[in-house]
Length: 308
Length: 229
Image (tube, each protein chain N blue to C red):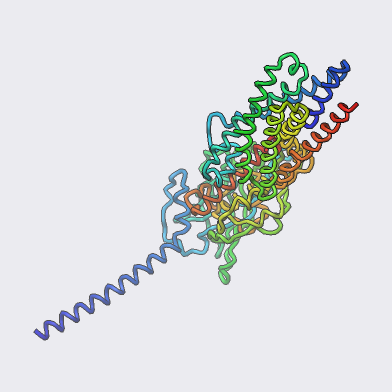
């Protein structure tokens, strides 16, 4: 009996230890997943073509990840009202054989690409194409420069050529640095956005220049509950930017040129990564957006009208 | 439209002295007055059909659920318009002489709307006015004076004191016209200076009726002088 008891105890002890170890392993695995596959998670919900992007074990490669910076017009029709520079984020999601898969997010467009790449030393040279069913689709040719000694500094430089040669801008160049996207509610608008001129003019007053004011940097709709008293004395432009800063923190890529210009040109932390962030908004942010929107609409409709 | 009051006095003078130029002026003022009444009607029509999350109320959602606020708001919006035609009828010497019944009935309508409906509802809304204490005091004072002047005019007419009756109604109507002048000031200030929305709101809260009342007092003094002559 005594023996049996001891054996039973021993077995139980082993079982407990084993269980403990297994759960440790589980948590480790989970952590690995959550850090390793962020690019994939960002990719999937926005996959418009259901491209069969094969999942390969390339997550650890330093080339995989997101690159952001200016997307600058280099060949353009000078007579058109084109946008000289947008901010772009290029994602390299996976490599398989000699194929590279990824996507780019710029000016409210989220487009998949794929194409061949070659490795030259530690650098990658790639020529990738967008599906071709969008007006603004084209071809990216770039080099990812990796300094093996210092993998914190990885750059992507190259050009993009439009399929449609009749577009206002048919070629853009870029020099992007590698950066992971992270939502941070504390991100605030920089001081130099105060008094920034807003793109576009009121059709009623085409000569009038509309600019932001110092008030625009005072309020953060992602961290504080905005009150009527905060918003009721603000100009429409300031309200617009305060509201859109909430979307910008989540990496929303703006189609609206007026808003996009401000975030692309003035906000260093801004990184466009998605064209739909509604699912990511916090309850506080949703509440603030609703209230700001009310004052925005009121300003739009009634500010310079006969009425209160 | 302080000028609207001026036009009445002119019209009285005009019909007395038969100055045709003044009649043209009188006609123009009626036209302007009708135009502004039309603008106010358009503002009123924003709230038809009944909707408590539209136009001005879009930015009043913090007070919309305060007891009686909605009731006060819609009472004010739907009834205040009724007092505007009074401007075209009550100050006309021609109507007073040829159709005294019109003067009497529309007068009662004017008084009833101001004292029982538009006035008290305006006062209640004034308590919760946008723009804090600055505009709240102004709007409450405006409502109280509006009711007081109108009520006094009724008291005076029942005592057959027609001079005081007229004086109080000139004051009352000057405040009625603040519906037009407040919005006109706002339009002008925004057009000229583009002030911040709540700054302009606080300014016009006072600018909308104080000058009206000053002009009304000036007209009343002028009348008294004319009478003495």
